[in-house]
Structures are given as C-alpha cells and as structure tokens.
Image 1 (tube, helix red, strand yellow):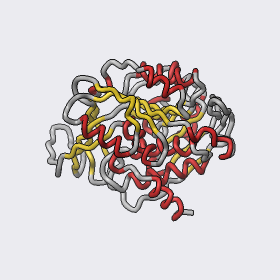
Image 2 (cartoon, one colour):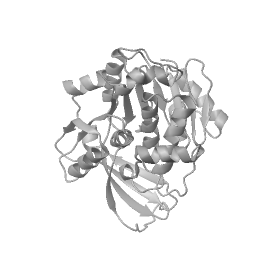
Image 3 (cartoon, one colour):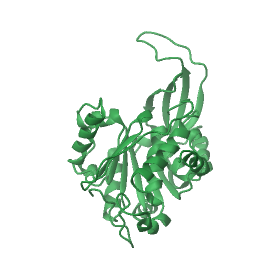
Length: 335
C-alpha cells in the first residue's frame, strides 16, 4: 500500500509517484463512491448561540447533501464517470436528493430505497461562512445489504471513495472487496468520531482527514505544520499508504507512502468565502478524479484546490460544486 495504488487489472499503475501516461488505462474505469446522502437543513445565523441563549435565523432552506452524495456529485460534475452506492429514505426529501445527484451526473443504479426517513443534517451557517453540523443518520444508518451489482461495481472500479457517515462495517466490507480486486481505496475521515478500525485501515490506500480529524484520530496536537506532519506520519505507521491532510484556507499537505517527500500545496484564494459546507468533500473528490485522470503530486493537489476554491464562494454543499469548465478556467487563470 505504501505510496502506490494497488495493481488494477489489466495494467499495474502507480498514480501517486509515476507519470501521467502510466495511468491512462485507469481513466476508463469508474469512480465508485459508497456513502451517505442527507437533506441539509441550512439555518443562516450571525454566530453560534451561547448556552441557554436563543438566536433567530434569517431563513431555513432544505438542500441536498451528505458526504457520500456530495463526493459523488462533485466527481460527476468534474466529468468523471461515477457510481453512487448508498441508501435513501422514502420521505418527502428523497425525490429532491435523487434529482440533485442525477442532475450532477452521478449514476444511481446502486442507490437503494429504505422505508423511513432519509438522512438529515442540521447546518448552522455563520456569517463568516463557517458551519457547525448535527447529523441524524436515517436511511444511512439502517441495515445495509450490498447487492451483487454494487459489489461488481466496486470490484471493477478505478477507485473506491469512502467516508464515515455510514456504518463502519459497511466501509470495511467495501474496502475488503476493493482490496481483493486490486482497486485503490480512498477514505475521507469526515463523519462520525471515534477510531478507524484496523480492518479498514489495512485496506486504505489514501486517508484524508482535516486538522481536527487528524488530531482526533491520533491523539496528537495539530497546531502547526510540524505537528500536522508528525500526526500524519503516525497514521502511516498504522499501515496507511498515503495521508492527505486538508488544511482549509491554508491548503493541503500530502504525505506519500514509500518514503516519498511530503508535498505542500497552498490554497487557491477565493474572492469571498460564502459557505464552507461541502468544501472538504469537493476537495477529496476532485483529488480522486485528478489521480484517476493521471495527474500526480502537486498537479493533483492544485486541481483539488481549484475545485474547493470555487465551492466556498457559493451557498450549500451540493449546489456549490463546480463544473469541469469552471475548474479548468480557474487553473488557467493561476498559471
């Protein structure tokens, strides 16, 4: 695992460290995103309330979201063939969520209807664009039973992308299927708190936490870049191949496996930050797309940074995701 993507039939590829030409064979293989889909209830507020305090919100909007759905939609909008594997309820929010993912271009052949409510996220959106989120799992946390079609999609993918808003046991099952088929596994550490199981870590090619998640996973401080690097190295010692730390407005830090030199990428500044909801999902998905399409190292990070920079200038998680044309234009303007 260290520093390399596992062999992918019929061609062995190493997109973290090798040239773009070596991954052309992977480009035709789909990205399979397994994860959550939520209805985001967005409450714009000036600031977070103090204990015992009541504040008024300027509005209430219901928008499509969920880390899995966001990442599937982000990859699809960037022009990459993407399947979404997940569970959705039979409530009034379900049609909105399905329509949004389809509009983005994600293939929903493996999205399963589950009786009851869909996942829901209450998002307190502050005036400075920062957010606080409370999640009700709904269908995301109901009993899962992967269909033969979903398993086949995982086994034939170019890469699998996971998060932590669905049961850990499902992530483990999917990751083990992918590893057995030689399919690389990207894990976004966002979602539930708590340690990641060793069974899951053993299958992960790339783990992507933000600074807070990195500190929580390792129990180490992440107050400066040296501490962040040390904490990321601690994750690698647990068997993770590569660690990609999302640093928000400060960019990102990639620690490739196999002794590769760390790569520090500065963020592409946004003219105005409107809403950071979904920006991390956008970044992770864009990085996965970049790698699958043959970008390596700093080039892949820069592509992901451009996507996230556009994302934060618009409100909502899924509605803010950029198109491939927008990302390419921003990159061209920063050359």
